[in-house]
Image (cartoon, rainbow, N blue to C red):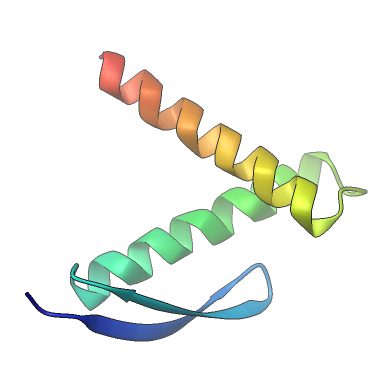
Length: 70
């Protein structure tokens, strides 16, 4: 299996990602998380980073479970 590595920016911070998925897939995942965090922050501008990350994860999980049900 291939082990890809790349640096991405999510909500203004740099993260190194490693995985067996393609670079384009990993970039898409990072972009999705970044977009969701910015979306949550727009409606909740006073959240600290930890709460913003948790609420974003809850929203992403909700989206996933709804798609899985369909």
